[in-house]
Image (cartoon, rainbow, N blue to C red; front, side, top):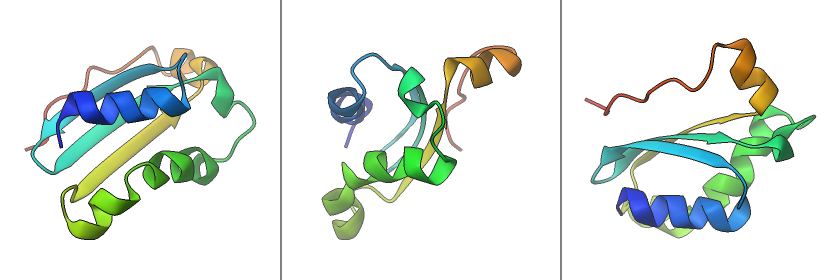
Length: 88
């Protein structure tokens, strides 16, 4: 998988979200910022996103997908979107 494929799938679920991604091959870190996460637990934010990649995770095409799902208010209280550094 590549970054573009991952962002396209996440955008299908959260079209208004701000998305940032880093990684390569089969390991990625994903930031998704959306008002849709307001009042939703961290686990419930991540589950639908992970479900988009169920097959790829099962067959090993996607080995690791770290998801940081935040609301805009949570992000602003942390000082803004952190520039994601590529995974080592």
